[in-house]
Amino acid sequence: MTRIAIHGAAGRMGRNIVKVLAEDGAATLVAALDRADHPALGQDAGVLAGLSEPFGVALTSSLRSGIEHAEVVIDFSLPPAAKVLFELCAERRVAAVVGTTGLDAPARLALEALCKVAPVIAAPNYSVGVNVLWALAAQAVRLLGPEFDIEIVEMHHKHKVDAPSGTAVRLAEVVAQARGLDLARAVTPGRTGLVGARRADEIGVHALRGGDVVGDHTLVLAGPGERIELTHRGHTREIFARGAVRAAHWVTGRAPGLYEMADVLGLAAT
Image (cartoon, rainbow, N blue to C red):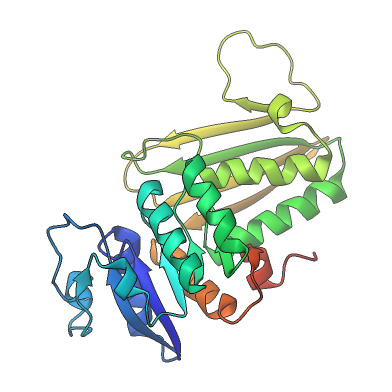
């Protein structure tokens, strides 16, 4: 049984991870952690996640005692809280699966220090399908060659505040590397007005917002007389939770270092 703690357990992702763990016969939840002023402190993590039965683990803000019996911590929190968690995990050499994005400099330094003493997976997206999309995208770009123009279109719900999505940014990084392009020069974030003819080394990135879309990402490869489109559509946030739990199982017992979902899925060498 993999002993797992969740940091940010009361958030949307945290609650989804609790649901996934409730169905996982190879894992046990040892701690549900969140901030000290959260109004749900003391509530059962299962009840908070909407399960029909209590989980038997109460939401707590005590990080130190919370990770005491954990083999791995799944973190979907905020950068300042993540920094404190990374420092405590380093003290106890506890593995981590990091889903918190936008880490500031202090949090990144704490993460780097943790990687020296414990295994860590950090990824912008834990969907298995999205990670396979990145691998397929790199292969397609290499096979098709420079005659095929690259465009990326992503769509998310109307409440998303950043654009383009982190997943789209990572997709742009993947295809730029596969094509041998300078990412900073290649990316064109949308177009308006008389922009002129499309450059051969351009990667167009377009963000759509509306409704309750969890996350759609499409890579368009347009060549002479034909076009290939690779699309991933996320129907529920549970896909990220399932990927994070899969990563937690994989990383437990590994050597210290920084890993990616590509390592978990066996895509790193493809």
